Length: 188
Image (tube, rainbow, N blue to C red):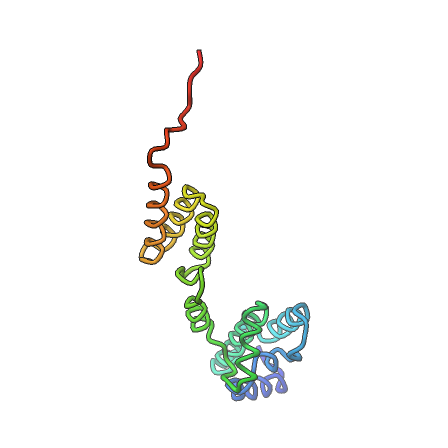
């Protein structure tokens, strides 16, 4: 299979400039572009650079370059399609930061959130932690214990969640102490 000379030149140029192109430049869109247009640009560029299109090409260097470009296009779309990540990426670019976005670093930094949900490391753990705190605030101690237990099961190595669970259990025990059981009664 032969490749068009203009496209081969474009691939060689893009792969050499890849470390200097931001995600918007790579997808050929304006930073103010709407999400749907970003998606359309991703589909357009991924069709052009998809490695499967060049399976039959005998030049391994060309195939490797196309694969590198395609991976960066997919990375760009993965960041720009998420509003929260896109906002963080825009801030990074505005501050003169790297043209690549480190998603793992961002997620690790977002885990260190201060406030009530900051003790959880995962979104699911945070969800149950916040539900438990809400139940605790409403003096629904059984509901708090249940949600803190879910959070602790989600993150078994998280001591902060275990501490919340123990506090809720203590509050439940204190609240139910001396209260008669509300078990089922059989009537004959």
